[in-house]
Amino acid sequence: MTVLSKTRIPFIAALVFAGLIGFSSTANAQEYKETYNAAREAAVAKDYQTALDKYIEAATGAAAEGDDEVERNALRVVGQLTYILGRAQLQAENFEAALGYFEQGIEHYPSNAQNYLARASALRRLDRMDEAIAAFAQTMEVATAASDTKTARQAEEAIRGHFVFLASSALSRNGARTGTADADEAMGYIEELLQYVEADADTYYYTAESQKVKGQFADAIASADQALAIHRGSRTDKAKIYFVKGESLMNSGDIEGAKEAFRNAAYGNYRASAEHYIETLGTE
Image (cartoon, rainbow, N blue to C red):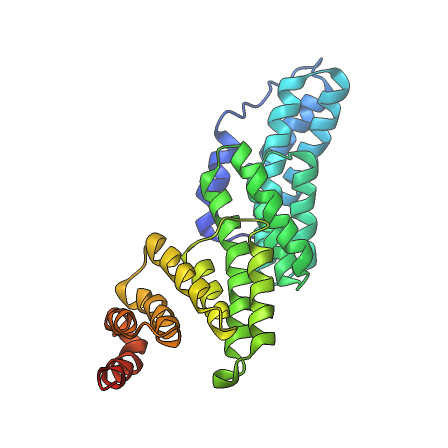
């Protein structure tokens, strides 16, 4: 018997009782209906693995008899149980076992977007990143088709976060010695990101940083402006965008524009550096 945390019990109860009516036991009851009832009883008893096995068996029997309603109801619960059992394995860091549950859920009930998202997460934990990114992309498609905006957004954020992290790492690992090769690598990650999701403020920011490193100052200023136009974070976070814009303006010879950008960048971690540039440029 699989033991899950108490916080999951209300959800389990909901999936067992919401619309899943047991069948009366009669001498002439079909075997798959008896199996369905046994599956329901196992779920109520919190024996989720047994419940899963019996729901699959009941669905197979119902399909053979042409009982679409029982088959559909059984498979819907299969999709939910595989997700719950898989999540328990994820929490226990049994990633291969978790992946098996999620793939089983997708096989039997392919419209449950949560199993796709969880499968992608398991692949990520197994460091199978190429497969994980493809799985997150598939999650977005399935969730969007099911009008599951929350799951679609989580998958999108996972893809975006992965590539933004790689771009940031490429630009920061050599510190002040960041070079063209680092910028090209960062841009490669941004281009991969854009194959899956639309650009956001961070995408444009790291694009601007890469262009600045490569001496493409006009392009960097344009990218920074695009980032500023759609940025929805804090003023402190926005400072990094103004800072790269200020550096690019300064390097392109627009001193007044640079000072204005640095004034807007004078917050949080960028405050001291921005104020230093403002003071230095003011003496020119």
